[in-house]
Image 1 (tube, rainbow, N blue to C red):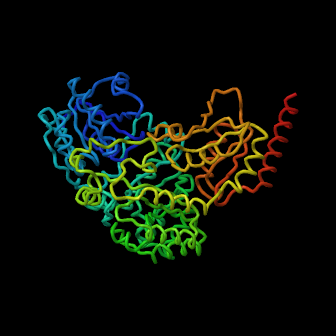
Image 2 (image 1 turned 180 degrees about the vertical axis):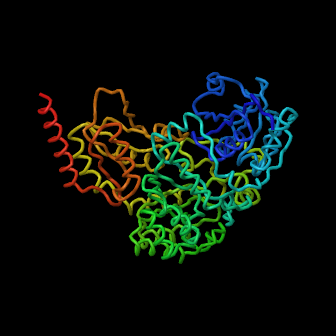
Image 3 (image 1 turned 90 degrees about the vertical axis):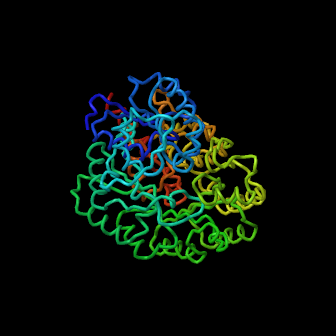
Length: 544
């Protein structure tokens, strides 16, 4: 293919990372095209971002979810006005291709898996017009799904954070009614090549911590063993580790899987419980039961693994009995961390169609356009659309009841009081939603010497500064912290990674964990601070 001087830019939204754009970018680069990825932050206008481009490409491909529809359409309009070929793809284009067609902003709309169709599109891009619909298809070589292209800004983040979040598969074999992944044909990426890809990312960018967006690697104990065995044979200098948490399914979690997870130095297991009610689990087609939920947390306790669960509220048909069953599950099973979310209907899911078919969404809305959706700042933690016949007062009541079972202020307050005797900052990543939760918690405590928060991975649409009123620490500040706080627990690879990053940016300064799990005790905090002050005094005396 002769693509000399041909240029393609992939536009992405929400945050400055996209595995779909990274895969497609790598394939386009392999086909001879100059490639770049451009991130459109929520607060900036399309014109502002495009004015910073060094060149206009032959093709601008926008990959976006339904959530980003309005922003993506505004970008496509500006691109079209400038005479650039525009291709729309991603989750929303797959769920609602006609929604893109009707705007007239796109020369082509690609739905489904674009990897197998990309070469043909690039060969014939000059003929694309009038929102032609291109059917995606699987690429015959499954290894291409594990090759990645990153922009300069993305490469910078990888080097600075030393971590990355990958996929281990495409689509999903399960059929949860609230998720669009199950409508895609499921494909597991090749295990050996997945490890090769991890090694390549480590060698190129110094990435040490690998986490995975999907829960399907840790659904198959045999697959985990294969990956674990391959990693165990790597040279020590590769330093490839998994993050502290593995996403798992309660229905398939077992003692043998827990044993393999521990071999990978993973300390936490995250489950999409959603609800403990069998009635609601059947409605959601979760293919798990109340018994599975209890058993999964029992396995975690037996193997010394911390448990994290996600619970969903405001689901159609969810009643007080469902909520009470879930509350009792939380009270009895005692998970270590709980995340609560409100259900939001998204195109491409069975539950989205159910909401329209059964009057949960008003008939004044067009199910095929999604132009009525108003994105909120805090993502799925806020109610985007109040569904008819859903009791949000009851949902809020049970969210608050569950939160009262977990009050970290009891142990955090004394530690913060000790830390606040000197200047300090809190250290974390805005892409981890619990960072903003911790900041919200700290807002409930009187503080005089907190210099703000330090974000190692800025650029997410729902960055901390948009979620919580908490000052940001400026690196050029004349005020330097004497200690740093983090929410990651002591036995995790994330804590080790944070400690290395802190040392690189601030020197050998105390990093205090205030995790709800394994954390520094008040006595340990006092000793850390005292030793640090002694070392500063000794250092000053040595330079005199």
